[in-house]
Amino acid sequence: DETNIDDSNSSVAETEIGRLLGSKNFDIVSPGQSAALRQRNVNLASIQGDPISAAGMAAEFGAEYIIMGDASSTARPIILPGSNRPSNRLSGQANITAQVIRVDNAQILAQETFHGKSTHIDANTAGVNALKQAARKLSDYLMRETVRRWSLEQSNARLLTLKISGLSYQGRKQVLDFLNGGLEGVQAVDQRSFAAGVVTLAVSFTGSNEDLGMVLDGHDLGGFVLSIQGETPNGFEIT
Image (cartoon, rainbow, N blue to C red; front, side, top):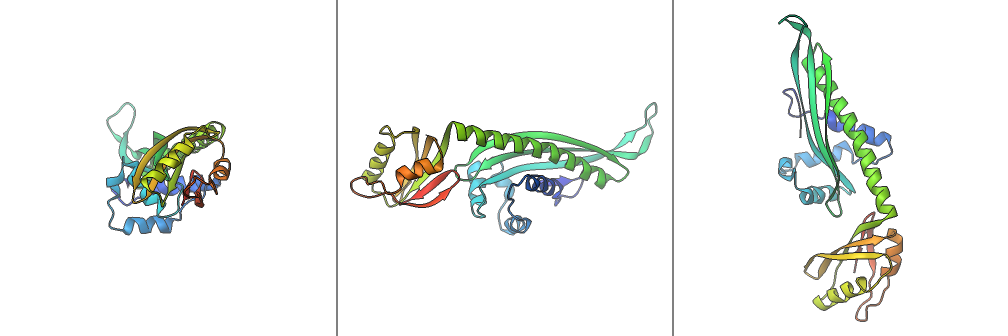
């Protein structure tokens, strides 16, 4: 949600954040896809502060992370020192707030607010430059924090999401008993939901996806065999 002076359709900050993240080898969902999202009958404001809804929308585009936020700018006359007369330049001020949400489990990885400022004879340009400055500060923070959290997860317990389908109620219990039965690397298991034969589990695991995948895939639980059908950077889809 971005406004530059009186332009409520501004995309200055979004474009700058995408440019900067792209320059650091982050793969960005194309602007065309983002535009298509906006054209749908979806009130984007309704998912502000709702990581689960935001993650669900981002998943439709194959994204692993979504950046949600808002940005705005104003431009006011600069008063000359020692007088009450305005100069011919305007002071642009911008504020931008954003958070990074991991799509597969709706976990908030980073969240912060930054300020930008600029002067120019044109109000719109002053606002644009202030938004770009705030976006640069925010992008630097988001990159550092996201990489820091990712690195921490690689060296310590990570939160992986397992979606296992085709289970009876008893089969769900067998899976939980197996994961909680002293499996190497598993620190904790939390059942998030069980409906229509599908159980969603959050597993705190010390190790890589491959480490856990090798244990799960093909494991015989007596009445059925686990089979991995899909993988994301932070979990598996299993039947």
